[in-house]
Image (cartoon, rainbow, N blue to C red):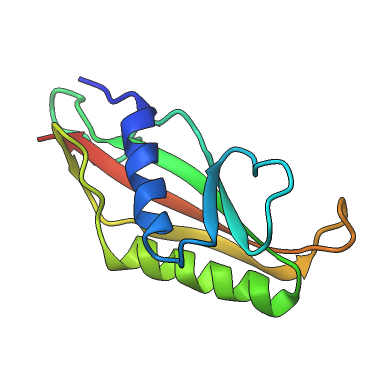
Length: 135
């Protein structure tokens, strides 16, 4: 049994959104037009069977890889949002019906830097793995 990534992605975004004040938003794949910093954008893959942690029947959990890009109008604001996203992801495990979800693992990050496309915003990115299997 595999998992369509959508329920897990939705649960992760809900978890991250709960970690910030209501005025700050967490978006899927793109920010809303005119989004006001600070905000985060989650870029997930579609999930895949783990290359590790397999049993003798070759069954394994589903790995969901995703990037969280935190955007701010200042370096401090981007770093603040990145701290909030990290705290949310490391502080709780989302609930997905019919799945056992493992705690998130941070796989990498990049320092706060100016967004070269906008030239007025700053970004901080981190890469994550969340694994799940049938409950």
